[in-house]
Image (cartoon, rainbow, N blue to C red; front, side, top):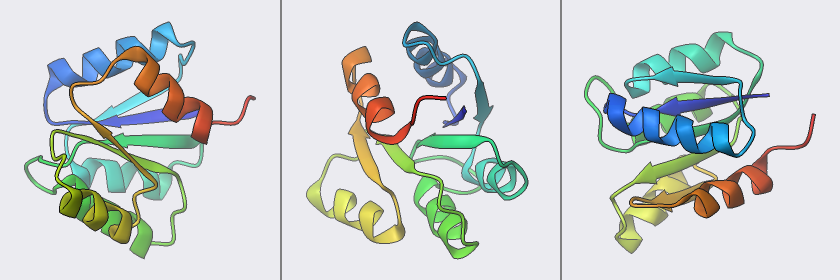
Length: 121
Protein backbone atom coordinates (compact mmCIF):
# COMPACT_ATOMS: atom_id res chain seq x y z
CA UNK A 1 0.00 0.00 0.00
CA UNK A 2 1.32 3.42 -0.95
CA UNK A 3 1.75 6.47 1.25
CA UNK A 4 1.41 9.89 -0.41
CA UNK A 5 3.61 12.59 1.14
CA UNK A 6 2.47 16.12 0.27
CA UNK A 7 4.62 19.11 1.19
CA UNK A 8 5.94 22.07 -0.78
CA UNK A 9 9.31 21.67 0.94
CA UNK A 10 11.41 19.01 -0.77
CA UNK A 11 13.51 18.77 2.39
CA UNK A 12 10.43 18.06 4.53
CA UNK A 13 9.21 15.46 2.02
CA UNK A 14 12.62 13.75 2.22
CA UNK A 15 12.52 13.79 6.04
CA UNK A 16 9.05 12.24 6.12
CA UNK A 17 9.93 9.69 3.43
CA UNK A 18 13.09 8.77 5.34
CA UNK A 19 11.05 8.18 8.49
CA UNK A 20 8.54 6.08 6.54
CA UNK A 21 11.31 4.02 4.99
CA UNK A 22 12.84 3.36 8.43
CA UNK A 23 9.40 2.14 9.51
CA UNK A 24 9.27 -0.32 6.62
CA UNK A 25 7.17 1.67 4.13
CA UNK A 26 8.83 1.46 0.73
CA UNK A 27 5.98 2.39 -1.61
CA UNK A 28 5.93 6.18 -1.28
CA UNK A 29 4.75 8.79 -3.76
CA UNK A 30 5.15 12.52 -3.34
CA UNK A 31 3.45 15.75 -4.34
CA UNK A 32 4.54 19.35 -3.85
CA UNK A 33 1.09 20.93 -3.45
CA UNK A 34 -2.53 20.14 -2.79
CA UNK A 35 -3.54 20.18 -6.45
CA UNK A 36 -0.94 17.53 -7.32
CA UNK A 37 -2.17 15.45 -4.39
CA UNK A 38 -5.83 15.73 -5.41
CA UNK A 39 -4.93 14.80 -9.00
CA UNK A 40 -2.90 11.78 -7.87
CA UNK A 41 -5.66 10.55 -5.61
CA UNK A 42 -8.28 10.96 -8.34
CA UNK A 43 -6.43 8.55 -10.61
CA UNK A 44 -4.50 6.29 -8.22
CA UNK A 45 -6.09 3.41 -6.37
CA UNK A 46 -3.18 2.05 -4.35
CA UNK A 47 -2.70 5.00 -1.99
CA UNK A 48 -3.60 3.94 1.52
CA UNK A 49 -2.61 7.05 3.48
CA UNK A 50 -1.91 10.72 2.77
CA UNK A 51 0.41 12.83 4.92
CA UNK A 52 -0.59 16.38 3.92
CA UNK A 53 1.04 19.71 4.75
CA UNK A 54 -1.33 22.63 5.35
CA UNK A 55 0.52 25.66 3.95
CA UNK A 56 1.45 25.18 0.29
CA UNK A 57 1.26 27.19 -2.91
CA UNK A 58 -1.17 26.41 -5.77
CA UNK A 59 -3.62 24.65 -3.42
CA UNK A 60 -3.35 24.47 0.35
CA UNK A 61 -3.61 21.19 2.16
CA UNK A 62 -6.96 22.05 3.70
CA UNK A 63 -8.39 22.95 0.28
CA UNK A 64 -7.00 19.70 -1.10
CA UNK A 65 -8.73 17.74 1.66
CA UNK A 66 -12.01 19.46 0.80
CA UNK A 67 -11.53 18.64 -2.89
CA UNK A 68 -10.56 15.03 -2.17
CA UNK A 69 -13.57 14.48 0.08
CA UNK A 70 -15.82 16.33 -2.37
CA UNK A 71 -14.75 13.80 -5.00
CA UNK A 72 -15.82 10.92 -2.80
CA UNK A 73 -12.28 9.75 -2.03
CA UNK A 74 -12.13 8.09 1.38
CA UNK A 75 -8.34 7.60 1.69
CA UNK A 76 -7.23 8.56 5.21
CA UNK A 77 -5.57 11.99 5.37
CA UNK A 78 -3.29 13.09 8.20
CA UNK A 79 -2.49 16.80 8.26
CA UNK A 80 1.23 17.26 8.99
CA UNK A 81 1.69 20.90 9.86
CA UNK A 82 2.94 23.61 12.18
CA UNK A 83 -0.67 24.82 12.54
CA UNK A 84 -1.24 23.64 16.10
CA UNK A 85 -4.06 25.94 17.23
CA UNK A 86 -7.23 24.14 18.32
CA UNK A 87 -9.29 26.04 15.74
CA UNK A 88 -7.05 24.75 12.94
CA UNK A 89 -7.34 21.17 14.17
CA UNK A 90 -11.14 21.50 14.28
CA UNK A 91 -11.16 23.05 10.79
CA UNK A 92 -9.09 20.17 9.40
CA UNK A 93 -11.34 17.53 10.93
CA UNK A 94 -14.46 19.30 9.65
CA UNK A 95 -12.89 19.46 6.17
CA UNK A 96 -12.43 15.69 6.25
CA UNK A 97 -8.94 15.08 7.63
CA UNK A 98 -8.76 11.91 9.70
CA UNK A 99 -5.97 12.98 12.02
CA UNK A 100 -3.38 15.62 12.76
CA UNK A 101 0.38 15.58 13.31
CA UNK A 102 2.12 18.74 14.47
CA UNK A 103 5.65 19.58 13.30
CA UNK A 104 8.17 18.96 14.67
CA UNK A 105 7.44 15.25 15.06
CA UNK A 106 9.49 12.11 15.54
CA UNK A 107 9.51 8.58 14.11
CA UNK A 108 7.23 7.29 16.85
CA UNK A 109 4.63 9.93 15.96
CA UNK A 110 4.61 8.78 12.33
CA UNK A 111 4.63 5.14 13.40
CA UNK A 112 1.50 5.76 15.46
CA UNK A 113 -0.31 7.20 12.43
CA UNK A 114 0.80 4.27 10.25
CA UNK A 115 -0.44 1.75 12.79
CA UNK A 116 -3.73 3.60 13.08
CA UNK A 117 -4.48 3.82 9.36
CA UNK A 118 -2.52 1.21 7.40
CA UNK A 119 -3.57 -2.39 7.44
CA UNK A 120 -0.86 -5.00 6.93
CA UNK A 121 -0.64 -6.25 3.35
